[in-house]
Image (cartoon, rainbow, N blue to C red; front, side, top):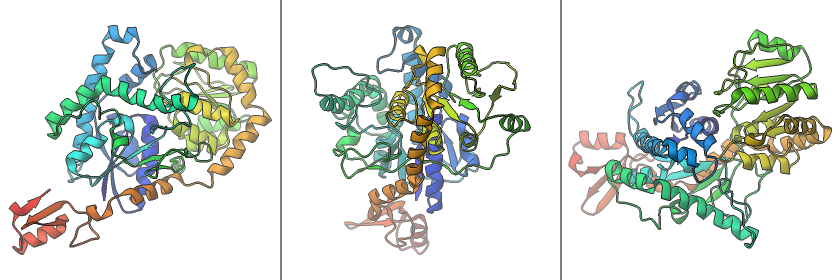
Length: 475
């Protein structure tokens, strides 16, 4: 089976790479469609890559400026909304072309037999409809309505509604507001590129729920169990963690790690921060007051600027978390699901400083299990707050809680469980060749009311033997 995966940002790409690698081990061909920035990361992992366009730095900056559902007045005045809509239009088309365009480097033909996507890719159901292939939603945060907890993006306050009811309603609010902002863009793309009719406004917001599209959520059921009101089409399988890559640290990093007790790690990855110097100063002062050494990952915001390394502070470039987190005492980050999972499985107490999206959700989860402090919103971060959080995370209590959850996570295999979830939900009979059932069907042979599914090889053989006509084949 050829599967096309849609993933947009750095925190989405890493779990999808782990999952794509597992699919390859099961014999599937996998193409991961995301931004150009991640081409090397994807290809180095052994997966095929296709660019969908868009600028992730611009997208990240927009999300930092607008962490909620309603854009700020500054963004409205600055033209951010128009730029975001144009970017979404470009990425929708990129996702569509990722389903059938040849490989950009090798020119090897590719047609997706199945689509795996996260909800914010928006293209998922529509590309699947145009191709007539199944789609499976996989994501790192809840997107299916439940009474157990609210949608992570819905910062709704209600004094006169039962909390469980408010939780359930929050999912419809997010879907409706998203469709109001992008529904016309999606419908225009459906007409122009896919040749499909418009989706009605009443159907657009909850289309994946209405169609009962299978969902797999990649977080540990030991941390958040599957809500009782989710159906059989929804699975919770465990975090998507990749194997620790082979990594030889540069000599200066190796020397720093060996020169003293395990340091605190601080990093915000692809987050674009408005004032990186202020954040750097807060980190340095808090580390000094707590008497700890610190590794600061420069990230996209270039934390630390041109500051030199010292015996107490090390400024880091690229380094795999799987390797590094085994060698630190505490991790401080933005709360991306992949980074959170990597810290927890290594039993590292965690401080989440969220900026947008699911990050406050994961910060709350970490605090609820005692494996870290309460999340500190980046806009309210101060030296005093970071000092208090560090002191808790350096305590025996935090380390015991982190170790307990790590023991539970280590017996899970999220990617393999998710592969089984995909296989269990695939309409296998509709996907395989009727003549050579070990191969995927790519053609329909129609004659005198009969419909036969054929693979490329079966169709080519029957054509060469003049048993069928090309005009009788439909893709």
